Image (cartoon, rainbow, N blue to C red; front, side, top):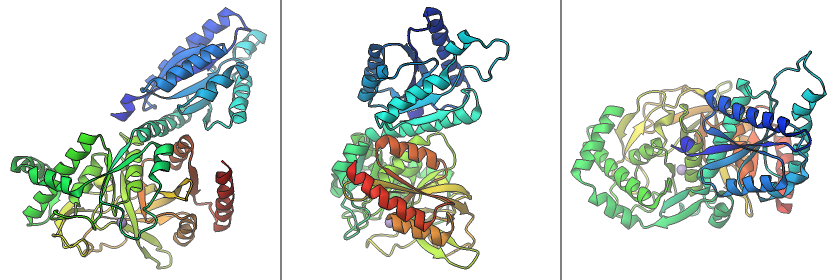
Length: 491
Ligand code: MN
């Protein structure tokens, strides 16, 4: 849906110095490269060869078109020959779309016999890409630099990942978030400056009355519930005889989806403190909506909800899964140090290792009926947890590498979905770093978006990015956070 909606423009730099024949060759080759890259099957979106730019006017023109073309999610530049970069200055200054400098070369190898000065003038990406790189550095432009032969799998995969980040940026700029109720009382980390978030990330975060949702819930027909209930029974294992509780969740799912779709919202947040007129906290309903690509945040956490939606959009078509997650409790046994993540109900089944079970259990908070929820274990594999926090005056993304494992205990009395993981570099150092950086208890856990994709997204959005890896030390992190703080105050 999203990957098909967007395309990337291939803009090739040159100049008139080497004559029209060279320019014809450059244009032909650029078109051929775009075609072959599209045929590779390694790029999620289409590359469209646009122009071999030789003048400041041509560059400004293509930038203006890119800025106003909704389909264009970014530009990819490449210097086949030498393209003097003062020509690019005005155009690049106006650019409002994500920008990738693709440092590559038409030929892979230097031909021993064929190489002479004509060959050198035609194939001088090493030269031209440096001139092009300088102007972007001089302008302090946020950009992605990819270097390597354009038919190499590694290179195309890197380009493909950047495309996903750029699509995530386009999605983000149009994202609307539906809030039911405010943030949970007295909680700090779920708060945030909605104006700053809209300015930087584009998110429109607004509230709708819980009463309106209740009207929608009550208007859902039995036929609608029958159809959705049948789908539940097919997709999940029904492990309860409280069918009414499950059917009520179907009503909630239909009603929330209806309201979001009417308003064009792709994410929502609610809180157990504001369920007036509802019979249950949405559990199964929220899980189902996340599975369909909507973002969700509990306790009014609209930031994590929107981040979940963004990451789901940028990883569209990938199969590892992305979920709203919460750090719950630790296993501190030496050699078996793990975090147990869960939520009181709402973990996305896209991360499930096997067919989820529908269960109904009492919920200690919220004062409502026993909610139906999907219960499952998350699958093993490398992943990251991601948190967006408001530092006051700026936004910070914290991303931590984790290794998910099959939970080491069956925990038969735990009535919620669970994922178990080891944080990098190890549980205690990793948690220390996370806490030092101010990371939230709510996160987006994703097996699909890797740190590079998220770093690229953060760069496009112009927000701080902190990455906790196997090599992070508390000392190096403290220093990085201190310097970041100074730098972002000056920015
Ligand atoms: Mn929570």
